[in-house]
Image: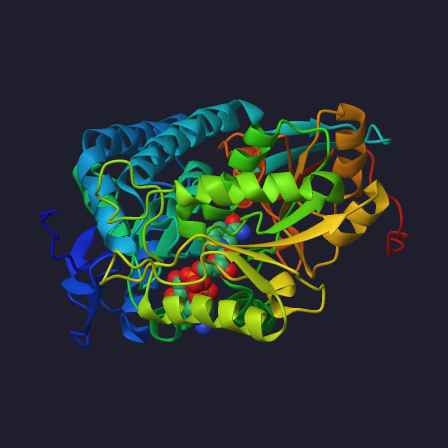
Length: 500
Ligand code: NAD
């Protein structure tokens, strides 16, 4: 598929700028292993320029002190431009991170929808200003102001490059913050196009700055920069810990959307075909690289044999191909390193005594590219790495259960707490599980649907804070208490000095 890869620079203060050290990083198409372009690599000096530009924009009267309705116009203009460019953006996303083109096109709809949604919330923010607080003393009156928190650093991963960026950029701008976005070095092409969209719609300079580059060279100095008032991070647990350490040193607020090892619990009363499809979608969607992938199948023992037989048959039917091929349902994982990591997970599971029921290798018909067959692993023990650690690839591990209590115990047997799915026709049972599952998200009779109106985030080692919905906007607001004394009488706590 021929697609032009624009050669972009860093986007700082509303202008394109070469990185100060002139460094660029190759862009590799994971389906072909070919270098298809390059991206600029920011370092600490570029981060400083971007932080200065964002701070200047924050304290000018062009953004943070404007009305929500004013900012909403820009958000809607960005959404409209994204829809205009949808085909180009979807192709860039697919070639950059390997997701099937049809999925990438969905992402672009979601991106535009998210900008529109936060435009609505920005408008609503105007009417929510000066919320009255009733106090027990009449001599005081109190109200609350919602203000933008300041300059925010938005650091994002590669699995949904444009969408994960949007989940942070849209609410941050709606709130009146100015921002510096640092997308993943493994997939930055669409975020650089977002910069171009912002330039086209005339977003005031410095309101959104976009720096591509490596985590330790660009992300780390950004997280610790003194001009940054808040860090919003989505990515791995390991990087999340580093960011939290840096935030602690500067006492900066931080939200962390980290990884998971989410369960899907399938009871004996399900419609087998429907449940099989949700199980596949829950784990293999986005080439298995989803933070909420329901990658631990907890299956009622009475249906295990029939269910697994069907699961394998459906797996054989998944089209694994270049993301641009019609009907592709599984593309490559993001990089050579990720491919090696996934294959090592599979070989470790084998060496620990698990059985590879399906897949477990590179598909034979694809000579190039970082492809992994959809893989199903059985005979899993809870002590095994495959049960405990996030793979971030198309690998599902399976355990059976015999009672509801056992299912809950297995589902919660993880250090993570991002999401879980329950499949059963018994809704009372689903409600009981919903309460018992220690996660931020529970899906009932489905897995993975995501709407920008609903909160997104986890507990335990999956992080804290919520993206999306009004909760996503609150991440970027400072709640200011304003209390006024309303009396002609003096306060009267201290005695006035006696008159001479
Ligand atoms: P990653 O942690 O390697 O990188 C994420 C971002 O952090 C990138 O932009 C990277 O350049 C940057 N970074 C790396 N080191 C840094 C440092 N020292 N300081 C500051 N920034 C640094 O994660 P990834 O491999 O890009 O993404 C995959 C992970 O993201 C998985 O664990 C997945 O579960 C998680 N994820 C979570 C969610 C969620 O909503 N909870 C969504 C998507 C992905």
